[in-house]
Amino acid sequence: MSIVNFSDNPNALQGMRDAGKLAKEVLDFIEPYVNAGITTDELNTLCHDFIIGHNAIPAPLNYNGFPKSICTSVNDVICHGIPGKYKLKNGDIVNIDITVILNGWYGDTSRTFLVGNCTPLACDLVEHTKRAMNIGIDAVRVGGHIGDIGKAISNYISTNTKYSIVRDYGGHGIGNFFHGEPFVAHYDTGELGDEIVPGMFFTVEPMINVGKYKCKVLHDGWTAVTVDKSLSAQFEHTIAITGNGVEILTV
Image (cartoon, rainbow, N blue to C red; front, side):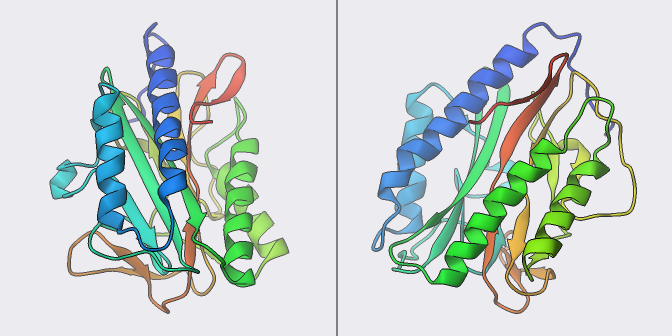
């Protein structure tokens, strides 16, 4: 699939703004519920009902067979965790990944939440991961290249931490579809990658591990975990490239 450029679609930017705004509102809504004792399936139900109640569709539900409306990735789960019976515990970290479809447009965002009193290591990981996402977004420039994002994140993480950056998953093109080109690596691949031009929509969503970057997928075919069982965190925004520069759609 080639990169889709929406510069000729007069409805695209506003449609993506609306979808991004709703996705952000879902995370704001669920945050007070992210406490010890709640199951990840209960979080899923709350988000599902909120999304449906706002005349939107939860994009993950039945996407290539995914059985739930959100992803909940706890502790050593890197991404694509399936909500279930697990009850959050004091000291857990959990990434909640939200994608909504509103009027045919997709808004995609995630945050990693701290549950109760977390260890200094967990707090540090979450803080650096959020900062890494922002640094990656700051590296986006019209006329620049997708590879600039991974270079900026790699420089920050290697300079300030001993953590590693997940390589098997990255950001992606988005619009009136869920996943497409460009693939956005969050580590330095040594390549320029595609040129960044107005009319592009894509996500920046680094996944950072305390230990090694390697991961494996569990038997459910979705849940990606760290091979060394170390903690992993992620933050994500959807951004638009406009004639005026970069617009973050999910803040």
